[in-house]
Image (tube, rainbow, N blue to C red; front, side, top):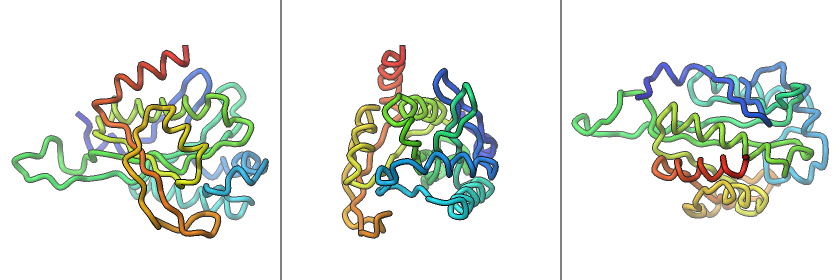
Length: 211
């Protein structure tokens, strides 16, 4: 069973096609380079366009890690180390159990979100996103023993929604007027999830696709 200590360590996660490493300020130049192409692709996603804003973006992520609120990664190419984008675990959920029903120690979360994910245009559609999500989901369910992993995306972001549905995530619903959109509108948010009881089936299907 997971313990609270497990959530203070950022792991390195790796597959043949992608390597997820702890995000830090040294990744800022690579992220800026990754974000330069076809900015229209990022209109529904928070992808800073210059080094100053990217540095602040990374600093907020690293601060979240120090507070135990997030586990951010740089998505990198395992062959040459090139930065392809970023992703993170965030919004850990600590459910309020009655003491007699609590199944795990106080401080150990029950669910987590995978978010703040974006990839350079050249990496989109190559399988890198699928492999990165496979690594993150595997860690969440097999190491942390999460009960649910949540994903949220702008309801208009059909590329993101198709990718989530391709993973096997289920649409839980749409939150209307949920937050400020990154394009200056008020956005609706599509909420997807994968449950612990679904993971073995989804994992086997993803692994079969990779093979």
